[in-house]
Image 1 (tube, helix red, strand yellow):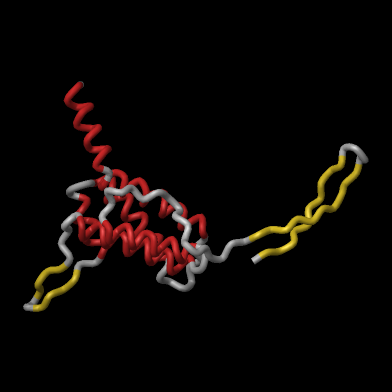
Image 2 (cartoon, rainbow, N blue to C red; image 1 turned 180 degrees about the horizontal axis):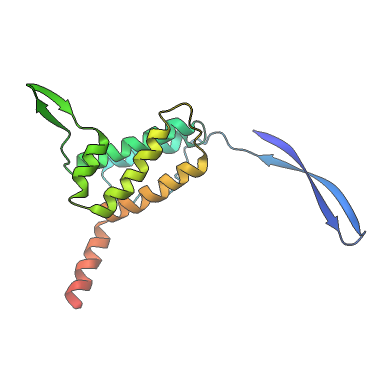
Length: 167
């Protein structure tokens, strides 16, 4: 989409204000999709695919994008082997993502808190009355980028081990 925007600018040469018009381009989709952050090669493939799926709808539908980012959190819980369900009264019941993040918090407090923040943004995408912005999604992506770097970059772990050995 594009629109024409009018702006007033001061012209020092003539000593007055001029009205200028500028074309403003507003992207609504990209094919192939743009990656909004670099996904490290050590990130598990199913998580990588889910992140890319969220990138595809970033420009089109903020609520759908938020839900897809939330689904990435579910996949991370799966990869971290966080319990999905339990048996109650002879029936299998699923734990909520909130509960699963609580379980994960016993293993990794900082990243559990980070993922909880992403979950809240994802939940906002599920409620039609809440207006998510691209800025909200970028915050979720910033947090997600940090979390997957902490959880999946093998190089980071290797460097930490080398540093500890030397120190």
